[in-house]
Image (cartoon, rainbow over all chains, first blue to last red; front, top):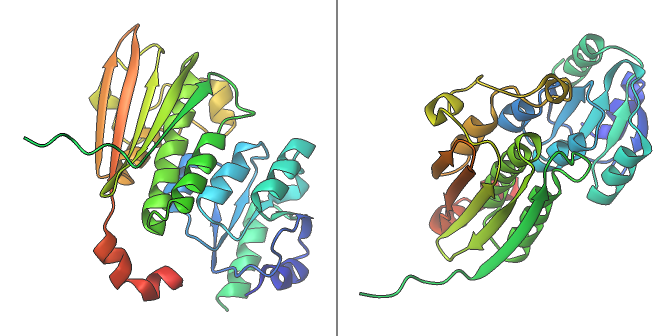
Length: 110
Length: 158
């Protein structure tokens, strides 16, 4: 399913939309960067509470379809700028990580 | 008898310790260079992860160091060197979950004890030489499997 469609259905707000048509193949929830590097899959939507610059690097390295900040958390302007440069989609969810992941799972694997 | 083949490409990056703002940029740049040189996507992907973990170790634990990228026809090598505190027990550091990261780094999602295991999982050979009080040198070797990449076009295109 396309990221844009998922964002609409889950009420996610795009902070950086470099490729809203990216294909979302699954999801991954983690705040540990090495854990994401080891286990997230390309095309996953990564749900996290981390908001610093390195999130962009990890998202890019793992080729996730986007990074979703849970619970309405918003990153600073530096992170947004880096994501624009590197072409990483950033979104914010009004819900917590559990609810965001649950609704995403239901949507992707009904 | 024959001399070792020189690398096709060589790049040296310096890494500033404790500079989390810039951290992660070498791995992105390494991937860019490897892609430009036509290195197999699977090797580019693994090299990016190895480089990020190596870079983060330099940034989090040392005053600074450097990363050397060597690209050969049959392999990619990444050499990380620093003048940091050194690793007292390398075997322990290779174990998943073992970490000496400070609290501030853990709060940022580092220090889960997966750094060196991730480097091992994504390279074909990982040599660690460390001396306490002097520094650490890590050499990661990633073999390029051209035949496999060519025979796997369906997967590579997915």
